[in-house]
Image (cartoon, rainbow, N blue to C red; front, top):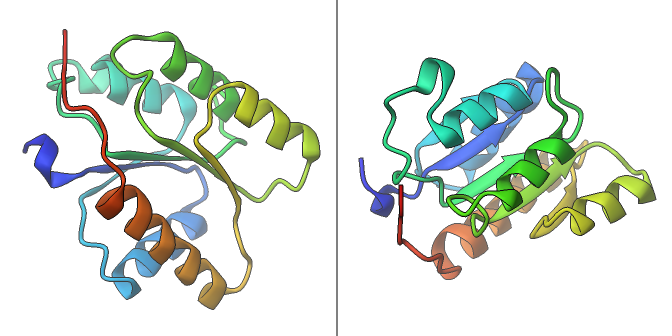
Length: 150
């Protein structure tokens, strides 16, 4: 697996939202590998090669992180802060995808370094369109640096 595969890291604890995301990517013909982690600690373990991900090559990084805010163990904002605090991950694109309509969550997400904040649409057609646009921009048009210092 190489950086050219453009991995998407989905940090999502709700199985229904995970399935909707998978279906929306399939409908939108986004064929990138989707790595799913179910809580904030697992996301950090994946990114920094700890726990069950020990030994994973940290230079094989996601092209995009889709991050829910309301997560067990470590909440999404803390995950975002830790991503931005580490030289290895600070430049990774992070899109907060949440059901939260709270203005404070929006402010906190951008203050903590989110690249984008999207409220999950309830309607599948709108959700699929949002995912299609995400895929087009973040996985096709957007360029990220590919340097890695372990």
